[in-house]
Image (cartoon, rainbow, N blue to C red; front, top):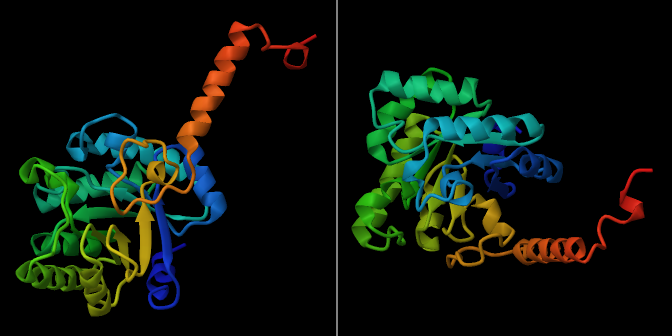
Length: 262
């Protein structure tokens, strides 16, 4: 999977994407043959137990990206630029993104933000670093917003998001994540730009979809936004396995002769 493959998919077939943070999960995603794997800053809440993604560092993303890249031979791997890693000079942002490529082993980086990030993105692209854009809900601004909410419902907001999508395309992004916006707006944006859109809580009209892998597996049943569909209740399966293991050890059923050396 390469950027030309991703660009050629628009209007032809849907792109299928998810997140991965570990070697084991990345290997599984590679075997299935999904298109794009995002080493998202969602690793903060899903792996490290932070209350939001703000506390994720560049070193965190690089650490997890290394494991994901080692396991994955088939998918296009994108690494998230975490909070404050792009809110610096162009030179420092180039250095941060370069580390994610060279040390983390990813194929591209993802940057949250609208038109204000256009010149920064242009500099990265000019330096040879592919960039995925991200509009709509910006989780990295949760300290300002106070809560996660759907974006782009007002007329002026809709117009602004369409303009920002066009500005980011002009800056050189190869794809655009649309998070938590009305499906009608996502359709307008998708039709307004020539690069693929990838939705998360943005309806069916995007060129592709991404869900956080732990949500797909139902590993955190207490957290279920409206846009999340759980495809397997792995939480219950794992809990049962642990209870069965505990029971057999306590009752001296395991290990038996079959699971012992002679």
